[in-house]
Image (cartoon, rainbow, N blue to C red; front, side, top):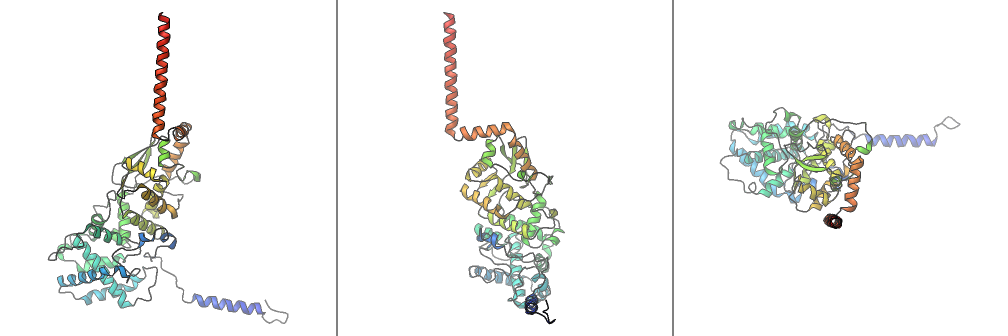
Length: 442
């Protein structure tokens, strides 16, 4: 605004200074590519259970590089690279360096952070050591490396579990095209019949995935082109095995979007729970008052794997399955079913959950905390089941039956007392009838 003399006011001058300062702060800001699919876990997710996103024994990629407790595996990375080069005397390390240097820019663009503190040479060295370690680990687990002593740490069950879990952390990834390129360049003729994807899935099935986590036994060679990294590959392959189509009813009142009761109370309302047969973890059905849920084995690695799959779905949606977060929907569904250890105990009794942790309360807390930051959307994968179960429970006879069981039959002793009262009533009635008949006989 100008003053009466027509000169700019002090307010205008301050506004220009502020505008210049803001523009100066925007000079170094660049638009990030949508392809930055390797990222740090958001703080609100990490605060719930940070250990689920932290590597235990091996750092892959730049996010956890150089951490003291992970340095022990660096020697194994160097040894793997040396043994790989010894097997391929015609190729010098310079050929791999040149290849990875040409991929550096594309690889850096896959990470949310810019890592300006890591030089080009350091980044290329990291890709070579980490990438060759993964490729060699897969080969050794598949028995494709001959002339080498059996790996002592691979033969340890707990070690392979921790390795498999570390390689499925969302922050602990290399771009898949780096791994694919290294595998192709280091493969021998006898390995050409092996599909890289098959080797990856075999390793995870062998190392970390419990029963109930099927992987495709027949891979699609083109599917790896859509994979971002190892976690992405496992996510998409798992859903390809298990993804059944389901109808959606998006226009029903929001009160039907979750269960009004938990497993224990649903059983009181007359709903039965049974283990569903088949390999699809997500194929849950509700028919004729019976809810059929596939069996899930809960191990020490289950929470970490699910948490990282959910973070990947929530913040880097897959192009497959119409971008629908099927695993997030599954965990939210289970969270809606489970409120306490009593619900877990009932599902274990029905052989729906197999609790390898031993403590039902720990499992209940796991499901409840995983679902904390997962929102039920209008297109929830299990919407139709929410709707049908709530409709079933809303029927008057089921509400009456649930109320009766909850108020009068909430313990085993209540049943004993009830049957004792019924027997006493029957005996009294029988005695009365006998007395009446005896009276008339006289």
